[in-house]
Structures are given as structure tokens and as C-alpha cells.
Image (cartoon, rainbow, N blue to C red; front, side, top):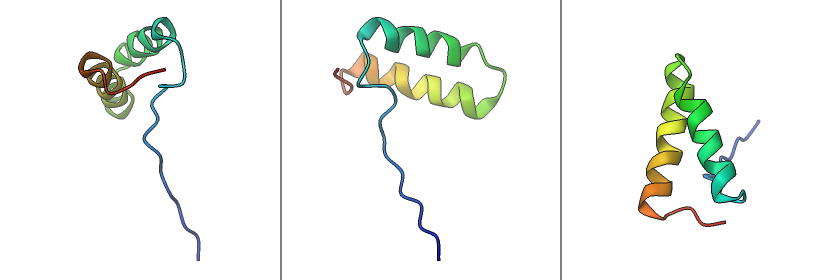
Length: 52
């Protein structure tokens, strides 16, 4: 049996500038999954849930 365990990290170990750059690039994607991840990071940055 294979087990997959996810972690909710989304680049929080990076500088604020790096996080903003990641968000910008992900939000440029036309692939919905990639765009959704960018939106999640952006929301976490705006709510202060992700600290370096």
C-alpha cells in the first residue's frame, strides 16, 4: 500500500519578495490548478497566514 501525505507549505519559507514573485508567475498560468495554487498563496500572504 502506498501512502501520500500532503503538507500545506506554499513557499512560506521564502522571503516576502520571493513569495510575491511566485504568486505573480502562478497567476499568469492558464492552467486552472496552477492558477488556484497561486490564488491560495496570494490569499495567505494577504491574511498573514504565511510567515517566513
